[in-house]
Amino acid sequence: VSETPSIDRRRAMLVGGLAVGGLAAAGLVAPWALRNLGAAPPGVFLAKGQRYDASLEATIRDGLLAVGIDARGLDGRRVLLKPNLVEPSRLRPHMTTHPAMVVAAAEVFRGWGAEVTVGEGPGHVRDTEMALLESGVGEALEDGGLPFADLNYQQVAWRRNRGRFSKLRGLYLPQSVVEADLVVSMPKMKTHHWVGATLSMKNLYGVIPGIKYGWPKNVLHHNGIPQTVADINASLPRLVGIVDGIECMEGDGPILGSPKPMGIVAVGASLPALDATLCRVMGLVPERMEYLALASQRIGPIADGRIEQRGEDWRTLVNPFEVLAEPHLERLRAIGGERVT
Amino acid sequence: VPASDPAVSNDPDAIATVAVASLCRAPVGGYGLGSPDASEPTAWSALALAQSGEAPAARRATDWLAKLQARDGSVGVMADQPDPAWPTALAILAWSAVDGAGYDDRIERGVAWALAQKPWTEERHRVFGHDTTLEGWSWAANTHSWLEPTAFFVRALRGAGYEGHPRTRQAVKLLVDRLLPSGGANYGNTVVLGQELLQHLQPSGIALWALEGETVDDPRLGMSLDYLERAVREPTGVASLCWGVRGLAAHGRDVTGLAAALAEAAPRARRAGGVYKRALVALAAADIVRQAKEQAS
Image (cartoon, rainbow over all chains, first blue to last red; front, side, top):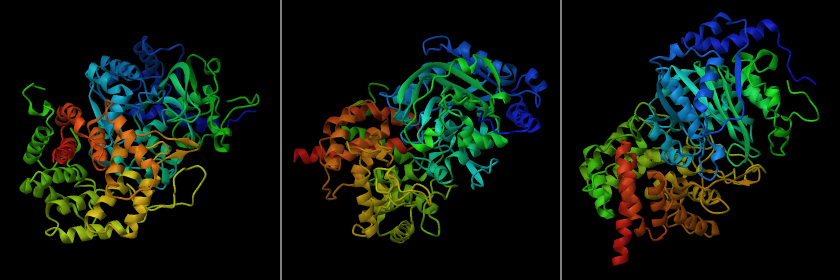
């Protein structure tokens, strides 16, 4: 049974174009991708067999180029890498983005002449120094000479909510996000006990400043998690996703789940397309995930036929993730021979 | 850090002196490099300065907070951000410590604002282990009560003479309710979908600091102190360490052996910029000094 909602082709092409369009406007998309703007679906790059102690830099570089990022357009640009450091614990490294991923991505962008900053506003802990220590990211940044921006406590600026999926009229964003030419969402590939999966779109909750929204960022919860995930993504146009899918988390994610080795690195310039593809790898039906369904209306496509697969075919990588035995999660699973499309 | 830096000595008095001296020069500040001046760091700075007898500098900090107080009594997070206003609790604490009589009107207006706040509550649900009907204080208006803002308001209201107020009593109950079954606390959830959540040093320390002097007949209090004693000896952030010290000291657990850890943290606090971590170091060092003197006497 196909779960693909009916979307007419003209609209789907327009939606596909919008994701690349944000980057095109910023001059960050390759000419070949621009030529195809509005005519070609966004690309999602998957690499398998990846390890934290191997050549991640080459994989990430290949992935970014494969999805249309223009390396020359990044010279002198400000790039903010946003890993997931939600509630780090040295006993649970599969919860947070691995430091090797962050450093490798930074090296790629620095190699292209970009000015790279790593930033995060941890959602559950106020002591960001502790989060950097527990995750190992702090030490890696120090070794790599990379600056860190604590997004929870910076000067904030109000920006109109361009998604309007929730009732929020606008969003307060930290200075480093407002000033970035490109924000790179670098999540860990995990299940999430409220919304199903947390990937490149949900990871952007971490750019919202705790000093305004709290710990947890409860203002967003009260306005609907799916709706505010979509809102944040719609309001941050210059986005790319690089997903740490090497040592993942299944079960009671995003904090207490179990390790799930996958060996995947995924890259996409359309975050809905990227996340939808990874959901399929995880054995989840993206069309049933509310924030992805919302995103597919205006932000980017999630239907498989509207996404250009590059690198590995996701079908060869499918390895279903365990989810909690809760009705709102079990309904997301692709089970019983159901074809996930 | 140069070897001659007095902060690297394990003498908590010297650690406090160095931190307070730097706060004297700039008592108003932010959380760190790149962070604007903010209410919470400035309030901790005022408290650290006041307890060290640095009255003029402390008053500069509390006057800055007074300028931020809105007509409704609230104090926002930053000069240009009147919402949310959870630092109102910390301003009340700072004003009370620096000049309770002089800031009397501001304290009362801050208390009135605090007591008028109604956090979001909900009937108990199987999904959550904590009592969702209890009212404490939230980070932002119309959201759920969480652990740290509730702890701050408990201390502020007690300091302002509202120890017996029903809201204070209920908030104390909330703080105990939010302790994890194994002891310790996190941001304020305990069990979600059947799983106990992770402990963290900073919120655990803050909750225990707020429960100082309260009669708590719950085994989780002792378990939380035991957790703090273990956790505070692991490598951690400056703020977490300081709150670990403060939480333990508030309940008479021996913190004199933590001077070395604080000495190691002090240079990091200075490098971080802002006044936040230096103020916390000064307050934690003062707790150690106080306890050492009590032990000596």
